[in-house]
Length: 448
Image 1 (cartoon, rainbow, N blue to C red):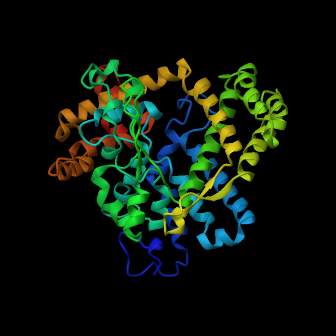
Image 2: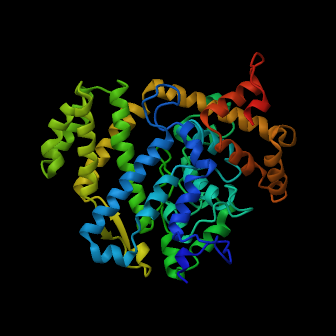
Image 3: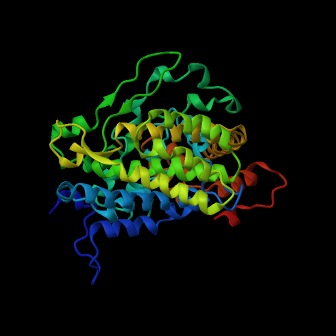
C-alpha cells in the first residue's frame, strides 16, 4: 500500500459502492466540515459586515482552490513526465486550497495575535498550526483523529514543519510586553512563529514516518534569525512539500490580486498610489509580459467600467499562473515530494512581492482596518480571560469535557484556545456582549 494515501485510523472496509479516490474523500471531508463552513463569517481583509461585495475567508479559499487547479493544469502541460512522476493530482490541490485557512481565528490577524499572547506560556497560537490541529484532532469526523485525512493531504497542509517552541526567538519577545494591561499589547511584538504545536507532535511524527531519518531532519530544519534586539524576528522553517508549494502560490495570488480588487472597489486605495507603488517598480524591471502591460492594466483596474476591472484581474492572475515553474529545491532529499517545489521565477517573485506589499501597506495597515483588528484583538483576549478564569462554570458542556481530559495533561488552555479559534467574528462578538454588556439581549441559548 502507498504510505502517502494511508490514514492515521485505517478502516477495514470502505462504504459499499464508494469508488472515490483517497483525495476525493479528503476533499469531501473538508468541504462538509463545520470548520470550513465557518469561514463564511470570518474576516479575510475587510471586516465581515462592512459590505456585501468583498471576500471572506470562505470566498478567498474557493478562489485559491480555483487558482490551484489552474496551476496544476499549467504545470502538467509544461512538465508532463515530471508531474506524472510526482503524482500531481488536481483534487488533492483543490482540497489543500479549500482547507488552508480553516485554522484562522475570528478577526483575522488581530485574533491570532490575541490568542498567541494569551497562550504565551502554554505553547502559543498560530493559524497554520491550528489548521493541522483541526484536521488531525478537532473536527468530529472521527472520535479522536479529526478528519482522518490521508498522509499526502496532511503533508500538503504543513507549510511549516517544525514546532513553535523550537521556532521562538526569545530576542523577538519584549519582556516589557509580557504582563502588561491587555489594552497596551503591541500587535507587531506578538505575531507568532509559524509552526505546529508541541502537543501535536505524535501526529506529526506519524505523518513523516515514511521518510528516512535524513529526510525527516532536513525537512524540519530551521533558518535561525539573527539576535538583533531592535529588530529580532522568529526563526523559520526552510522546506515544504511539492503539493504545499502549489497551494501556497495559489494563496499568494488570491491574496495579492483578488484582495486588491476588494480594496479598489471599496475605495480603500487609489490609482495614484497604485501607479507609484506598483506600476513604477514593476515597469522598472523592464522585462516580461507584466512589465510591458502594467500601465494598461492599471487603467483597466481603476476604470469605471466594471468589466474592464474584471478583465485586468483575470489577466494578472493568468500572468502569474502561466509563469510558475517546477524547480529542484534541495538534492539532499531522497523523497521526490520534497525534492521539487513549484516556484515563481525570480522576476515574477519580485512582481508578486510588489503586489503583496501594496495590499499590506495600503489595505491591511490602513487605520480604519487596524481599528477593527484591534477591537477584535480585545474581544478575543477578554473571552479567553473569562473562560480560563472558571472553565467548569463558563464553557459549553462538550468543550468542558475536553477541558477536563486535557487539564489532566496540563493542556487545558489549549482547549480554551481551540474553542475561541473556532468562533466566527459574529459569534465571538455576541458572546462578548452576553458576558460583558449588561443591556445585551443575547443569551447563551441563542449562541449554541
